[in-house]
Length: 233
Image 1 (tube, one colour):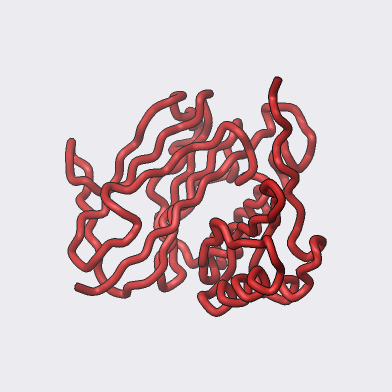
Image 2: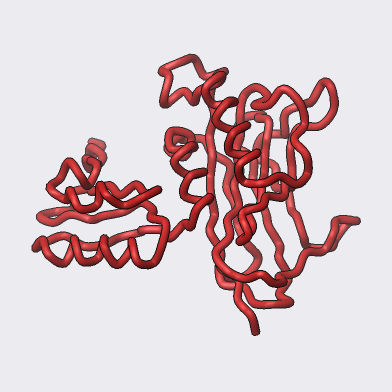
């Protein structure tokens, strides 16, 4: 017998209306035994404090995994909301911990889903700009192989070596997989957050995720985000 998954509801629908006023955030509640756990993301440490106060004011409610994702990271997560809930997603891992200091090596490993998919990997920097680490290339791009691990920033096998440098703060890696190319042409290697988010929203409207549209698998879009923080020595 397989136990049913715990019900997840928006926190605002669960008697936490104060969280509805949080800008660029999504907080949900799931039942855990006789209590409840809040999870999701917010745009600032101050907003996380608001979530903690809301939980403390309600017996049996605790704060689980709530990510602090400053804008534009939180907007990217809102845009990718359905894709982040997809089952067969790429995975992202950092060499070391999620806390990196000036001069540390920045090694990023991305594993593709279990089926061939077009892969997009982007690094959102603290100043709001983006660097695209991987995307389909050429006029007739090919999908990435299933279950393959791609490594960036380690300086091995001819790859560029990446190290942490100023400005410091919260940054994010976004990995998106799609059964068909998301964008009509290659994206510039570097973009502003507004350029990227506008292009991404257009792509997802044209090709929504299967979770959002109920469409066939060939329209599936899946995503994973990994947050990290950089600091001075």
